Length: 61
Image 1 (cartoon, rainbow, N blue to C red):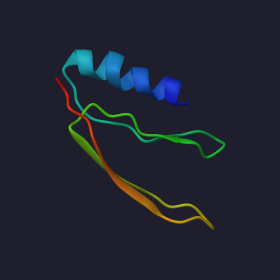
Image 2: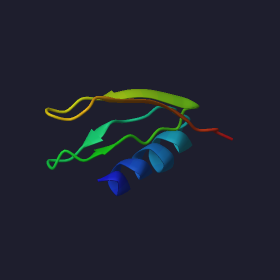
Image 3: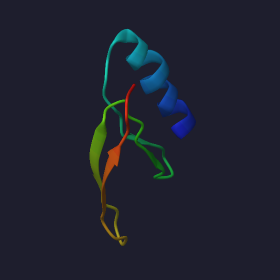
Image 4: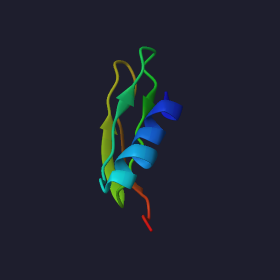
């Protein structure tokens, strides 16, 4: 699923002049969060699992 979400952001959105990200989920509950911005704040909550939060930093050239 990450292999499907990453090209959308980096090969379609970015060349069109866009910036942003997507939170993608598959039916197994796997999560991918590709982004083309300098940072991405995110949180993930699932039943019976600890809540995860993060700030990802990506330097865009």
